[in-house]
Image (cartoon, rainbow, N blue to C red; front, side, top):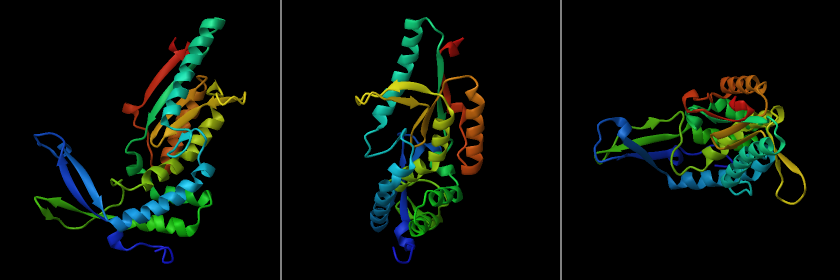
Length: 258
């Protein structure tokens, strides 16, 4: 597979079973699709995932949470908590009117809506080998499944998008896909300055942090709102990752409440 830069069709084939979410099933949304993947395909995906994981530290922004890294999801939540506390304590001690706003952005559909053409171009811009990209494209383009219903297998269905259980690649690829947005926001937004607890005496600017498709942005000034909106709109047009406004929440702090 490594030499041919493509995988066999059987390596990307899965069997989908529909499991009821409750005792009563009245509509399709009451069923949860669970896909059993080909073992060879899962093993090979794990090999590619390890190669991608090895380069994540070089391409991702430091505020992006990823597996196997000292900065985990728990640490990201603590940073956001500290940002809230710092704004509150600063206003109380100094009698000033410092403010900020935490914006929790939700990407509609997440990996399902990510444009593959955009993803491949990002991987190329980061310098990933063409042979690795070709293998990832082969896994994506050749994905198929059959639905097991009433003990029988249905016809083959080709998949253009989506995430199947047990595949380690989507999370890694999504992190890389949104890294240009994260780097831009961390560079342009003021954020909140946090103390570095490592003892080095430095500080950390928290302007944006993310865990896969859960991203939180820290706005320091009202003038930064148009910057955020333009960035999200432009990124969505290029990547296909649009913001779900209904699920996006904002938490005003300090002077932002008035």
